[in-house]
Length: 286
Image (cartoon, rainbow, N blue to C red; front, side):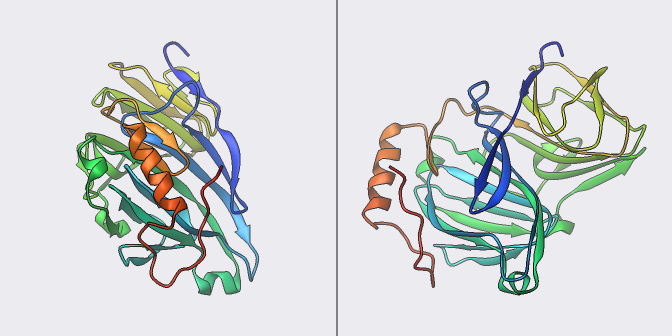
């Protein structure tokens, strides 16, 4: 596929939940502001079980959780306590420091549940990576969408396809969910300098080449493409303006390694804002 970089995601598990992670990789550290991309694979939790990610810290990034199925409870050191369902956006900006918890809500844990979705991290500018943390939640109906000729587009964050999301991104960003019926096609314009496609389900051609299922296809800058669906297909398109190189160390993202060293020391020494009502925490890896 001329000019297109194909990244095979690596499989991981977080608290028992299987994921695929194409970003970051040795081939590509970021796409626009996106420095981390996790596909939370479809997973059934039997009664009495669920996802449970204890209190952990972040700096220098915004996290965005978007579910296709299931529900998660988000709690953070700002006092937020929010249930997040399919089609909704959970948006947390860490700034100089925040801690949070993500888990299957108690009601779903009791009866069993099914989980599927995405979580991405977006880097912050050098000024905002030292700013105040914040959290906001957006219901599905608040996200702009369009539907025509067998193509459904939902703008999760940023701007694209003549749509603009209310999610307060900090730099030029494109994050769209795409659903194409069999035989439908969609032009992918060069409206953002960096872009990548991730095929969640289905079978599509990018121009005349097949996109790999659950692989990240990083598109060359300045070129337009056409997506054509051979069958019902589900994708996301990410991109935007690069913010420059970023260091990632555990859950910390920064332009300056000194900020990461300071954050590691603070978390190690329990010098960090606490999530109200939470005592369990994930310790700093060695």
